[in-house]
Length: 531
Image (cartoon, rainbow, N blue to C red; front, top):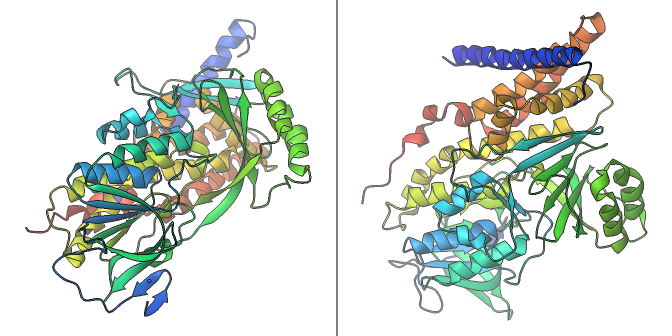
């Protein structure tokens, strides 16, 4: 059956690639006819504290309150989860290191699929009154050419689109909404460790903002403390990769070439992003490969941005870009990717960037987090009692499979697109990059398909793989026109080989069975524990 599906997949990818090629040939012929028009205590290990505390019938904290769920972190995932579980009647205690408004250079673009999840969670008003901008698609720029890729939103309500905003404003709105629920408690404090008893997480040990060391207990502890999590090692097997860094700038009072669109410049050595974050500001993120970036303090960074990056910026925003560099408010952020590799632990769960990260090129992180919250909410809703930790843990193993459709699609696309969009001296990689740009420029199914995947509107991993190899086959076909040669055939073979080397390791890390054959995973069929 797997072999049959693989064969069918290759056939479909080939047909899609050939269709794209036919489209190209027809368009070239049309141009010729038109005359060539252009176009916590006893022991502590890995953040876990073991303690001899005897459990009663329920977890009672130092202030006498009973709690159902402790959430560590109140970022996008933590605050949205707190409101969601609180709305379902759960008693929630959120512990966040800093409750002041965050100031970050990522987490600023919410895809349409993420906005639909926001609506599903009743949090859509959190993008109101923060000067959020609607986003209707992307504009792609390469070597003086550009193409617009619109989100396929025809079958959705007119309000559905992407949203871009200041990350901190969005988070504060969700925190405020969660805090309005009487059964949700937000507290500023730093969680130092998880409390474990006989292999089960019973709560957390934390320091309040006044420096007091306290312990909080609950049947379920959900860790959402972000990409720099110091608790994840006890709950998963983290393999964090840092392929590049983002250099962030804010351009003021400038108009992007395509209003209400994200802009991706296929620059050398790697992509540059532009998108609005308010009615007067545009965020620029310059990707710098590797873990080292030019020094900001001694002026190396400003020089790099002006001499290497600025010449590749669209003319319409070039002056605003240089002005932003001169202003000097330059910030950097490592881009981390980490496949989800959970170690199911009774009494605890990981979510958000603490659990799973992907390259932020496609802006899919918040969409994955909100989708995960919807899955977890639906799994927890039938449960009145969360105190049987081992049974709950076994039941929640289904979470890791049910989340895969959305998560693996966005994760795989982010990793693959980043590698394809980076410049390379290798002729096969150059051809793949150009083929990707040209394939997306064809429009119709060739752009709507990939964009619906990127936007979270069509979370289907098989569709992603088909389009990816269709691009590769399209690239090979272009090499064979007008006449094939030994050199071109060799580059074509290396193009297919390179495409496979890009996507297959990502799929392997995501989990082949969970991505493509979830029905073969036993946890997929787990029902709620008997009451």
